Image (cartoon, rainbow, N blue to C red; front, side, top):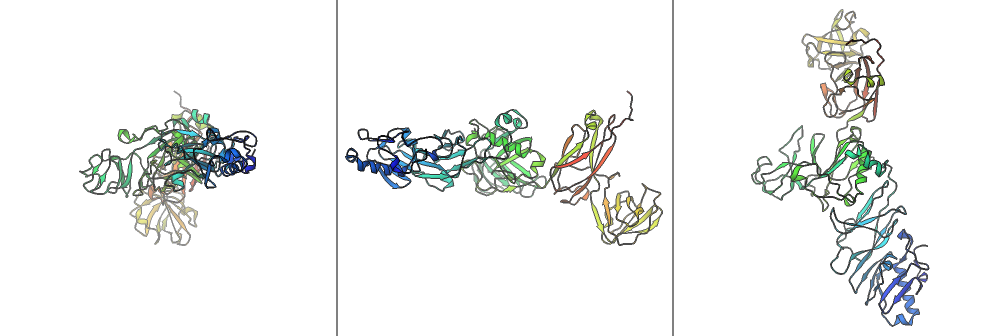
Length: 612
């Protein structure tokens, strides 16, 4: 049956019973009236219940001897007056679209209505006391919301200052609403409130709870909440309370220029030029929630260890723990002073991350040990300095998205014969084909004598080279003038002497300026070759232990050997085994991209022999 909006469907003695002895109104699951889920499609509206009561009073001499039970404030708010009350909780559970105040007891009931579709069996719940360990209550019915919630019992239980509704169903998008904040209310009252609480299927949830609870990398993920408040720039003669967090512009490391973050366990009145010489607050300690993104340090107070999971896996784990009724704070960051945030029950915790194009965190959340490919596209929202600090739920008032300088990422894919070899008998290295390339149309080869010559240019500064350096030349009209050359003598800005010692039989040819010629620094296959570092500064090198070997490359910031940051990098991967696989090399270009696949196939080796 549908929700009743026509008072003619509420019959005195069938769907409703008025007790003039007890002064109660009782709505019954009978006749036209039902209380089935969802509330959106059952029950009776407050307007229809009120209108039916007037019809019943008109038709009943008995009822006319008593004052009317209802007095409308408007169509979504009613007083139950003059000693009348509802007979039982079932009566309250059948009312829709309006709030009620029982004047005799002072009880107030607000109608909570969901504006968007949810699944028929989706169980929404609400919280009426602010706090990360405060209890939650399931709504009476599943599915689309439309039911009454007591916000004041008329005595001690006054819940008119807080009501938060949660819609968190496995495999679906999460929704929630804090009535007072979202609708800018001073206090709740006995009316109908409407919230957007839809929850369509979440395409980023690929695994169920049981799988997440039992398998890596999920089982190694953790979440830690940190104490701290304020998050302002340190200033002199300021009274800092215990637990204050400040940014000190005078303290920098690893190339930062804006400062680093500090925490005070005891507080005090600052006196000095910064945290380093503050004699008023003497216990400043590094804030455990600071993270360096690019060159600068930013503050966070919810730290996830992603256990090298992908963005999807971390998000799945985040959503899973936010439906737990137990403490999800692992307290693994900050030591005794900073990790005393306290228990946080998952079902009422603030959300941690979302997908909007890529993975984005909610304010104050950072993810350590996120899969490098995922980190390249993730955005981390910080606690912005001097942005108003934290709200009552320890979430930043002002938050700014921060992204790492772009790191390309992918996998070296090795052939099985190399993978199956004893690990210590194998190696792989990634080298730059060249670190820097200068190109000009005025490069000429002059003063040639067999395999030696002089390279000249008025555009390229050749004085950067020294005797013994290796360069690779390409683009000359004469093939003999292209290849690997070693610098001899002392170059000047406009010329340098070179020798083609690797191919001494090549006879160089005088080549006048004209063609576009490339001069490459630190070329591969010379002693100057430079091994490529990953985005942590670690050489991309190791033993061949698996088919897919992940790598990262700091595309936007890597300047090894004078490389121009933000440009594609030509690289050469070399690899070798002993008994089973030959030496191999493979050339690739690292673009500004993730998900790269670089196959390195090693031929079988049936010749190598080293008897014991």
